[in-house]
Every structure is written in structure tokens, then in C-alpha cells.
Length: 219
Image (cartoon, rainbow, N blue to C red):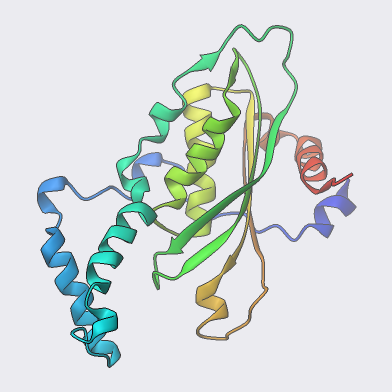
């Protein structure tokens, strides 16, 4: 078992224990107008050294603002509400539920550059199960915000734990960060792995091994 753990170079997140420490969306009254946002894009285009009035860039501010509405749509979503329906009619099942390889893309809060990869989520149900697509939506909710991978990993685990009250939650996130590939050391293809465990997964190392083994088993 120790060999399995050592073979998976997992970096645990240094995230706050309280969900109240998570980033709060800006109140609607404090948000800039669409016109102000488009003006900011024009300023960045000029700062980059280009002419926002040339033909190819005339509509770029509008496109960027529209894209940001989708890319950062997680600020307008409530992860708790996504998990509010539990299927309690599932009887006789109390073993692990694992959804792996959930694709996501997010943006680093330090450089606003994308990072993308896959999330793997497992839990031991206590009073029922949640729709599998809901877990993917939870990942998207937190991914579509300015993030660090460590914080996002913790947020996914914490909301599942607090809403579903399972016997345990395990989350692994694997991602490549373009802020590392495109700037700074400029090393592409580097994978960062973070994990977060609650309940039986946190208390029992053998459960962590089981989770990691199921995630890695591609047979």
C-alpha cells in the first residue's frame, strides 16, 4: 500500500478549513458596467502595443467581455444548490461511488492564465446518492472562477461533505498550468496533482489507497 502512495506524487492542498474563507463574488452593485469592462480591454490592447481601432480588433472588447461571462460563470452559480437533491430510494448500496476524469478548465488567480485537467471525486453515501452529473457541475462551478488548484480541490470536497454528509469524500485534481508553460520557467507538460480527504478517507490510509488505485486503474 505504501508503494502505491509513494508512486503517486500527490501534493495536498494548503487550504483553509472553513468554507467562509472562500472567495466571495462581487456584489452586483459593485460590478463595473459592460461599457467599463470593454473600455478596460481596449486599454490592455493599447498597453500590449496594438491599436484597438484597427479592423481586426474593433469588436475584440465586446467578444472578450462576452467570453468572460461564460469563462467566469461560476461566480453566479451555487454549488450547495446543485447538490440539494438526493436519491434516497437507492437501497442496499453503501460502498464507494467514484466519478473520475471530469474535465475542467480554470484560470490562475495570480496571472489570469488558464490551467486545465481532470478531477476525480469519490464518496461513501450515508442516506442516498446524488446524480452523477451534479458532481461534474460542482467541479465547473468552482473551476469557472479565478482559482488556485489547491483551493479548488478543497472547495469541491468541502461542499460535497457539508451538503451530502457522506461517510467520507475524496477528491483528486490533476492539471497543467499555462502560467508555468507560457511564462516564467516555460516548462510545458508538467502535471500538478492535489488531493483532499474527509471522513473515512482522511482517517484510514487504506481507503486513500483504494481511491488512488481505482483512479489509476485503466483496465
